[in-house]
Amino acid sequence: MLVWVLEGNPACGFYEALGGRRVGNKDERFGEFLLREVGYAFNLN
Image (cartoon, rainbow, N blue to C red; front, side):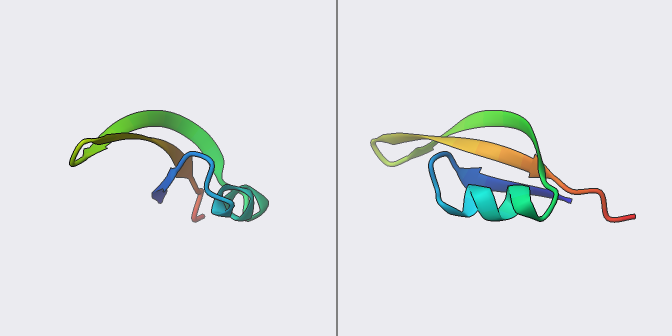
């Protein structure tokens, strides 16, 4: 499973505590704003 979260969001610590691994970054444009997102991968086995 992969979850994208805005960088700097306090929930990043929550996802890391659940075992999520940072696997990438991407930029998303919302209107005139460019926001950085962080991808967390989870092994569901």
